[in-house]
Length: 204
Ligand code: GRF
Image (cartoon, rainbow, N blue to C red):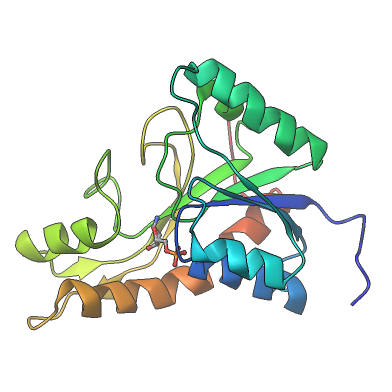
């Protein structure tokens, strides 16, 4: 397929399987998302999402904080890479580290995250993956679902752009609930990114 150089360039940041990354790649290929996934950044060398990037011929970069580096220095390194790849928008997709504030500032309103519960509940440090669904079930919530929000300097905190509601069923396990939420994530994330790229949200 010919590469359209005029499309906005998206970096997807991952730490794991990258099924949301795949949803974004697929949406980009189908034209539902008029952006090009131009870079995958992983905080882990063994993330399966890196294989997805390789299979698609997408550039990738393993970004690990050096032991003695400040968040500022780590941010500079990440920014250098993002600029080198001429990245316009950033999507966090299962990325487990905090984004350095110099990166947040440089990409203000152009950096989003997907979370697997209805924020502002069930978010924050340590609330990721299975822990989230366990907490939702333990609290007796009747509904859950993904949230896409802008990224700021605090975990799971920026302005909420969209959410989708799914039922929490009486016999749900963290796995069955995760599967129901994840299916919605894959539809929601490309849709929100498309609206963001098209400037369809009112942002400050
Ligand atoms: C998703 O549930 C996402 O909401 C959360 O981390 C998970 C990542 O899954 N932030 P994957 O790596 O995209 O499959």
